[in-house]
Image (tube, rainbow, N blue to C red):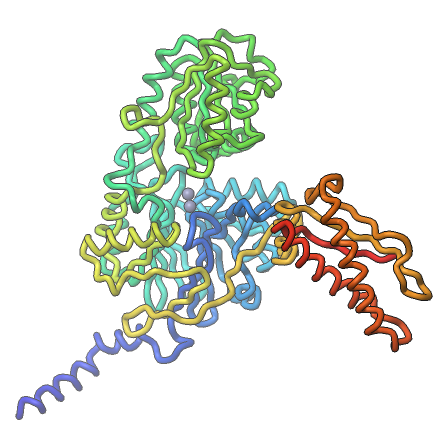
Length: 586
Ligand SMILES: [Zn+2]
Ligand SMILES: [Zn+2]
């Protein structure tokens, strides 16, 4: 047999072999037979997380979080993932899987569930309780189907999917990575994670299960929050030991501000209060709820009498008090800021108080935080912040070495950095390359991007609508770009209104135009501008009337429109401002 013939025979045999059949089977035959992933929302930032995967007529969503609006989005409370595509397919949505109970992963459920006809939710115990509390608040609890999962859970979903929950450490109990198998490929979602060798009150991440996924992960979506920070994320145990050392030495009251979402820290602080014989005053609604759920779940086990009400604060000696409060970011109405402004009902700073900021500083809040701590110090408090020498805060998100360990445990074929702005995902990609992952197998995605897995490769598919839905008070998606633009314009330049009295018969202007201004100009100082505005009004009116004179009834809207336009032009020319201009005719 000639060598080329030999090769052909070999290929034929190979093609018919069982391995190849399995291969063909996994690769699929047509587009509708491919495994698809859509990074719907939250990949490009921290917040509003939601992804979904689809195979044939079945869809699984992973997380449904909200995010907070930028400063220029006046009056908007939250942003939630766009559901236009999912709404059309709602009968195909088999489940929503939840990685953990932080609001950037579960916060949108109360709006999204009714729109998607309440697909069943699978969530760890802690997240389940948080979701249930929210649903009760909005009277949706009877409609929601929610199933608890734990570190042993492996769940068949629909005809095609199998989901394996892998326990990991984060900053909230019951946090999971999720591994999803389908007939055409397997996807791993890291969730928010770090590897803590000495976690505060929970087991370590399930390393064995992670290792068992080796060679089976066709794509891993991995968070990028701390992709720029070298080393390992500090352990929660170390933070807790440092806090214990500081607090046990204090003779006065201790006031600690912490994030109410960092449940592991709250556990440590309450444990420290017990050890140092201090009663705990919880100051802040979100803290109350977090501790309530942590106690109901058995994560924090303490007697009721550990906690006191703030009206009873003076019944206890200073060295028996630990005040836990919200407001580490200097938020206007949070407790610590109110204390710093002497606005709190019962808590007044006095000499001998120690304020501990057991939190990180979000960059855009730094100046607010500083103004608040300035006030606390000038009222007589001692202040302690997290420093390199004295760590009193640790992140719940893995640093570079944690991310590297994750990749080494599971050895995915493809990696997609998520949960971070492009800059952070870019650095995550650079690290991954350094650690030996083929650059072609590291995917930077966008919100709304669909990816398809065929011939062992992930390829970009179409883009679906992903513009976030704006939530303003009780309204869902009723605020569009126009309304937002108006609010921005109002906030920046105010409003200028012109009222004209037009004769019903002659359509002439009767008397003088009247002006109203809010946040735009003081009329007293703007006489010459008002004069020019008046001239423009009469010029525009004259032109309009001569154009319309042959019509039985002149077009008032046309006049209003052209007048608003020329006034905007004039005002911009004279003042470089763009107030909202409103012309009304009576
Ligand atoms: Zn989280
Ligand atoms: Zn997150």
